[in-house]
Image 1: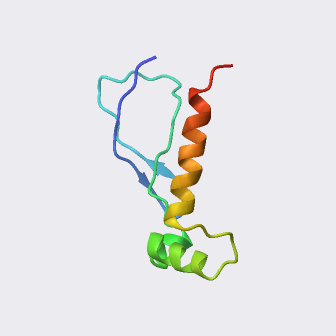
Image 2 (image 1 turned 30 degrees about the vertical axis):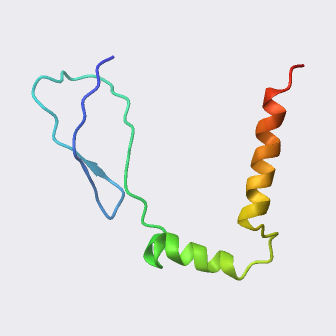
Length: 82
């Protein structure tokens, strides 16, 4: 199976429009659609909006020292022989 990367247009009625090179013969083909997501988070500020949303949530928070202590303990456990 051969692969060719092309640009295509998806119309409002969900039709895919693509012009194929002449080298591609008439045959059945597998199509993979890759597109940019235009979701609500991206429209509303992306990552910054997401982080602001998290700021109001009630989740356990750790200081930098607590995080480093946890990481040191975890790394130390890797060095132990079974």
